[in-house]
Image (tube, rainbow, N blue to C red; front, side, top):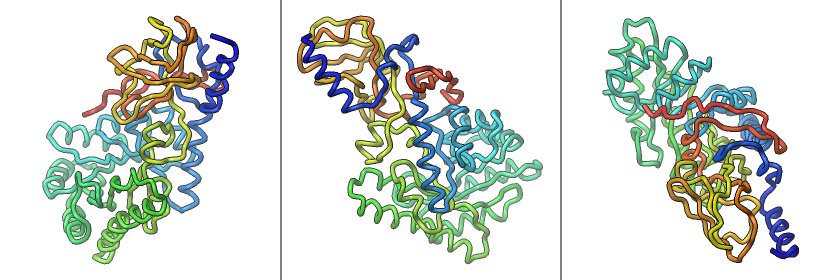
Length: 380
């Protein structure tokens, strides 16, 4: 390739990414999942600072992080606890000494209730309820056990998934939970997910305020009925920072923003830089416009957003198959060559991290840490 074209590609790449060229020279077997520690720590600091500024607690959702060492960084930055999607995740983090854990899900079934009772001996789990059947099952498990389970009523504030309607149904379920032996009613939880894709700042702010207003009004209804509430939990990366600014909210569950990715940036309009990448090796150059890498769908997802190649210009298309990524260029190029490394910015972190056993922490082009993704596979 002519020198002028090489310089043009390098200049274009520099304009589109601040990734260190040294990353591609890391002595790592590929494919490898990398996190830029400077970027991730800056994102953590940004989220924590916004929460402090609005006087709300930060309880990051760790379903997409799954890594104990990363959670400890969040706690050191001021997080009060964590949010998990599944009981299995909560067990992993409790075993690591983390006690304040919200499981933002309903726990159903004899085996899971047995595990939840055991978990309550290690930590102080909080679980979601949205039906009297949940209350009955939890009370049957915890009454007379000497242990307590904390509960929050999940409220459907627009997502259209789980949760009771706002208002009177929340109060009815809260009253039922509050009078059960072994149960401690703590408050309410909701997720204003229908607002995440709104591009207009003003419209998103209005939508979040209206949705969260239903949650805080439900909490106030419970307080007026004499029920103590110390948790009004909502929010996620897709509604950051609006969720943290709502009056009456006590905590927010922003999690994926510490990594950020193309999905959060392009679809949810979140202005946080991307920290998570996949390092891959060029294993084939069958044509001057085609590059084949050793990383496919089993390494990174393309479901919510496709990954992009850092530092490579004139990319026309990226295709993912099970074990390969195929890059088609707009013009012929000798570079990169077989054996060269490329770094791909992750499309969606939540469905990429869980594909790996470990995550490599990189700072200024050097490996600083290798962490086991301890909660990988914990879907039960």
